[in-house]
Each structure stands twice: as C-alpha cells, then as structure tokens.
Length: 86
Image: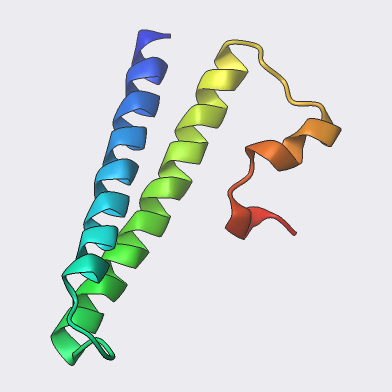
C-alpha cells in the first residue's frame, strides 16, 4: 500500500512541477506570438505535462483500487481530466 501511495504522490508532484513550468514559459514570453525556440520549449513542456497527468491518473486509479474505492458510473465524470471527458 505504501508503494502505491508513494507512486501516486510522486506522480502528482511531477505533474504539478511540469504544469508550473509550462505556465512559467507562457508568462516569460514576450508580447506577440511565441518565437520558434519558445514555441518548441512550450510544446515540449505541454507534451510532458500531458504524459505526467496520465501517469498520475493511472497511479491514482491503482491506489483507489487498492483502497477498494470504486466509482459509480455516474460519479466517473467528476474524476476525469477535461481532455478525457467525452
């Protein structure tokens, strides 16, 4: 159980660190469209952030399963990331 809790905690921290870095990249940008280097950096961070979010949801699901927390189908939508909602 401790391993699953730790994996979930680490995955969440990796995700929030990457989300913070992606937001910082946008705040550091000058006015106007992003330049090629800034765009490439932001795009890379956005991809890493998306992958980290998926890993966090997977870790959280494993932990919830281990804790016997099952989601009713009607409650499932509130646990999904906006991009995963259909």
